[in-house]
Image (cartoon, rainbow, N blue to C red; front, side):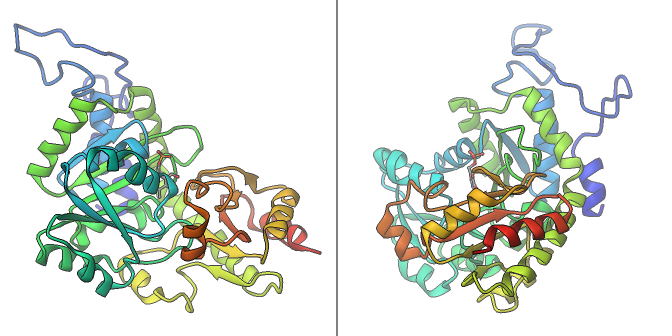
Length: 378
Ligand SMILES: Cc1ncc(COP(=O)(O)O)c(C=O)c1O
């Protein structure tokens, strides 16, 4: 099945019993048993719910893995994955991961004895150098947020396998429509499904797919034990959003390439971060491992004042955190999504105060271009 067909026909299609073409919302917490311990596959909705199960099957198929899991948010998904590790374990993480991922590791999971080293995972040598005796995984975001850095997933997975550690990939920016980390050798892929997968700014959710039964059993044990599951209504909304992921991603990318072309020729823009640009340092790797470059761009307008003035002037770019929805969104990472990263560290990473991040939506691109033009004036 090709990707666009899989988005519609993957997982569990409709309802066998009634012929309904969408999976019913099983708004239920518990299930009648035919005898003590003798149930029909479902006993309690934290453990399993048919609507959530349909979503979990769908994301499993889309990521070409063995088991899928749905959580109440991307952060709940990430935390559940990190609970595979124990006190004294160590993970390597991409240095400009989403601020919330940095925060949960350095302010929450550290208190349980899981430590992390943040490194530039685009540099393969630094991965090999930083693997310690207690390192259990390398956690990668590619493209990264907000600098759109690219890590070579095939090469990192190879290094990880040689060293007996797991490769975990946050695939939020690319989505399974453009990139499938498990097929490149990764062990676990996760998503903030709040973003492109949902696509309409109306649901907060997280998804995980693993490529191994043992990891699947371990993660189900954690999901059931800690309970951060996604409810049936949100599972259904997410499945509805996923059906149009293909056409949305194609359109996001088309609009983005026009905007990147416009920004590249603008004298008020000093730097553009977009993996689709031929001068992006890892353009070739992005091309090799992904079928598209996505709808996220960040660019530098030189100062915090200028960035704030652009944000105040735009009409069709909504000033908001988050990304990946039908409406274009604009933000200043240093003040918003990445404010939880200390200022010195942001400076080290290149997340300047004048950096603007846009998530290009599905409006008419001519309106978006005119809007950016007037906002960058002066
Ligand atoms: C790349 C990435 N990963 C994870 C998350 C966390 O997801 P959620 O907000 O659904 O908890 C985000 C949120 O912005 C993100 O951008």
